[in-house]
Image (cartoon, rainbow, N blue to C red; front, side, top):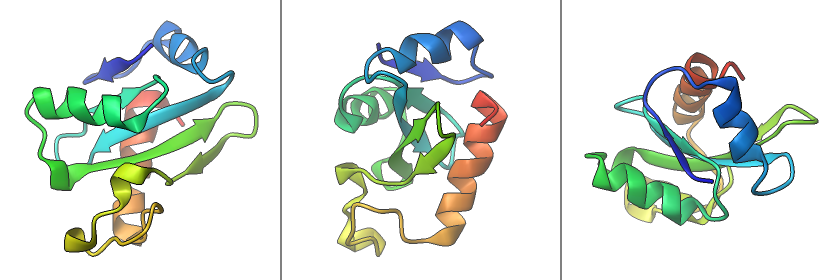
Length: 110
C-alpha cells in the first residue's frame, strides 16, 4: 500500500506500508518539501505520486527501511542521476543522506 506522508505518520500507516515487502518499507523523500511516500513495491510509484503533488524530480531520493534490523538504506534506481552528480543507485552525497534521515525521523520516528 503506497501512502503519501505530509504530516507525522500514524502507526497504522507504517504498519500497512510494511506489509507490502514483509517488514521492509520502500520510501521516496522530497528533501525540499519534507513530504515522502512509504510502501508499495517500486520506488517509481512513490516518485510519481510525489511529482503529481508538486515535487521536483531533483528533490526526490529513494531508499528503504528494515523494521526488524532498523537499518536505513539509500538504494534505489530512481537515485541514478548523473546530472545531479549521483551516478549510482546509492545516494552518494552525505548532506542529502542527512536530509533524508531528518525527514524520516520527523515524519516516521526512525
